[in-house]
Image (tube, rainbow, N blue to C red):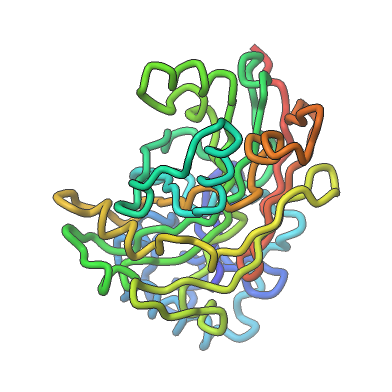
Length: 320
């Protein structure tokens, strides 16, 4: 299934995408005399039971759902999980880490192979498709980051990697927007990133459940990965290409690390980190673009992952 959050009369509603139509989950459930919530967090907190109920509703609905459906092309999509309970971002692609360090004159850090690290980013600055507002300081070396993200589907603590994939509700595209000048200034103090990252993270356009991705699944000794090519275009021109299967650390391993001594909750979002070639910081340093290329207001950035859809955002200058 493809779960979305959409706007209806200015209110965020949980929907499921079927073809080119969005079905309002709460309304179609009512048609079948069952109860499902109108928001994604409440839905996820119901666990596997909610997923199975929704599948049953869809199977029995037929054409009855027309009155509770909307054309996706004319409906405003929010982030699939517009209010995550938390948001972590990993550092899982060796190619990106290696290139970024090489471009700074540094050797590959051996500790990369010891632990799957992550940082917390601002879960209250989450966007879906559409405009990304930036302030003047963000425009100094403004960057995209092409990533994959998961959403935790059930509560867990001290989760072993061998069990971790069952805690994943689904996958989605993620763009971790970065203000590099701010980021590099603050990280000289060996803390962060913070202000270089906290203004925007976009996810979407929908949350794709694990079962829908079975044909792309690759089983490994350390959990699942997926053969899903990743690309970014800037104003229609491709600038980045990678694949989810190239993650050095699997999401299962990241979940094991993240949940050590800590409880994960339904609605927690975890990003993969940037794929190889997945940002201008890496591309500029590798002299792919010389002089360096950065984003500016008016630019349209589309991040795509096969099987997960296309997340398109436009950079706009925030009016203050």
